Image (cartoon, rainbow, N blue to C red; front, side):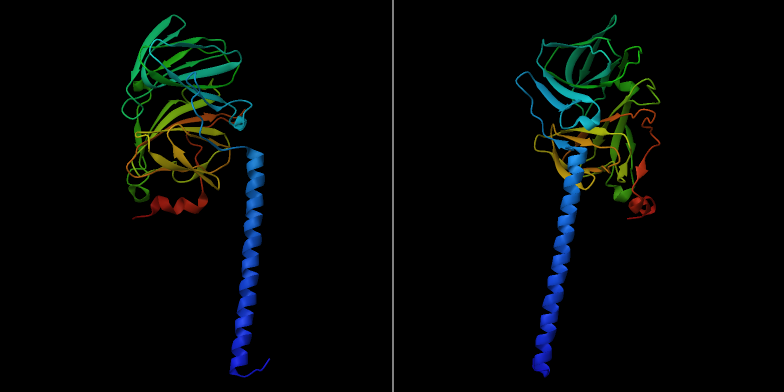
Length: 305
């Protein structure tokens, strides 16, 4: 090659092309490596998001002990009941929580009959019955209603408990922090402090419009399930589970394996409701103080925007 000015220019162009080709090859290899890593991770931890439909009997199945979300270690289902419908829940070797999402129902357990009304999850607090193994809980719909039923393995006997809205008041968190875009209202129906005999945690979150939830990104070793509802049918948000991101819609859910980061967000214009359900691990119950935030984002606690 002639090493005059033109030749040097050609040589430089050739070297640039080779360097670019090497760079592209490295990026391609890294991308393929990451894809393989993600694929192996997905195969190991199972599915982490779902869009279940209600069947002809009004049952919506989220997680079970043997479906694709078995790592949650819980059986979680939602039921739509028409006025006059009745359902009973009595399981051996399992504890069960029956949460009213909307409507008007009558709970019957032991010698107690209790009427519960909830216009919707966005305007009124929760009514919930928590029962031990072999204890029976019956529900009669006095109007069209929707209930969520959460169960897990537990042989411990305890008295059936009715939780009313005043037992689980809403409390705001993250107000004025993180640019004031992570505001949410949270209630805890029961956890290890309230029900140390239980293997589950049950609570609810209401996200302000266009806000984040579960922020800063955090993780804990116990598996957790999120069930989403929106104040409008076209509402949507984003659900982060580890390195995966899904569009959260009305009636969808996240199945979050232990150890995965899981912040959530809702689009501007919509309120998002999340029923959060955690399964304690044997000898390692989830506690309110167990909030292991991602170290990369801790600086945001003191940041001013």
